[in-house]
Length: 327
Image (cartoon, rainbow, N blue to C red; front, side, top):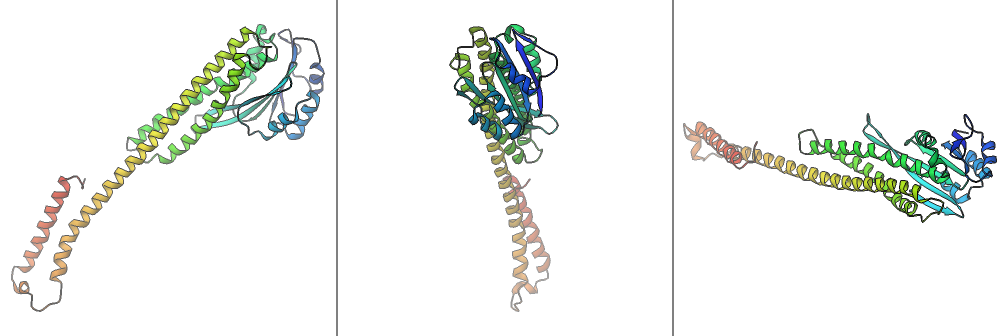
């Protein structure tokens, strides 16, 4: 089984070195007040997840959701235990793309089981940070939930900044001469929409946690930490909404500029077509095979026809140039 880490905590301290086995961890969940197990799993198989569910008596509906790994952020109450879904994000600087992952939390009084799928936030730093603060660890599993939420939400900020930089590049392309960025705008907007789906549904669970609507086990001091995370998440949600509007405006501006460019091209083509039409008309008239055309006997007929063509072309060219149809 892909166990990233598994530890037993009591009185705000880790009780051993290294990581526990699954059997040892399951025996610790029936211990004394204030002790709990924090188990972290990375992309477990369905069979491995069911082994964990049997040892920790996880609710079957929550386990089913964790197996599918395509859930929206949510918080569900299962008779004293809770199931929390979070969306994680990671911005790839090289590819200029956002990668999304998913974290499922099974939370009860004596355990926190974390199931991580896909790319996204590394939760090791959250564990290390919390272990360095025993006063928070004494708060039990609620402190673990805060540490994970804080890490996931903090990891949203580099993604917001990366998307912001991409939008600035797209705006430069729209109003510059760097080609047509329509495709990039479209895919960037899809990323922002998916990012919005990761952040916006999380606001309701965070509001429940900061208000104490989930459990009274969260004291006032720890609730302040949840309030801080909720504030950061709301700020990210506002930024993502602004980015959606910016991309919509950029796409509309790009399409408008493309239409203007197409109109200019049509004008230029029409101008040259009109210029070519006049000499073609003159040449076609004098190319008709009639015997009784008075101009055919003129000595100056040929140079006169050429002069008429040249004058007509020059006049039409100057006219279309003056009205801006020719560049």
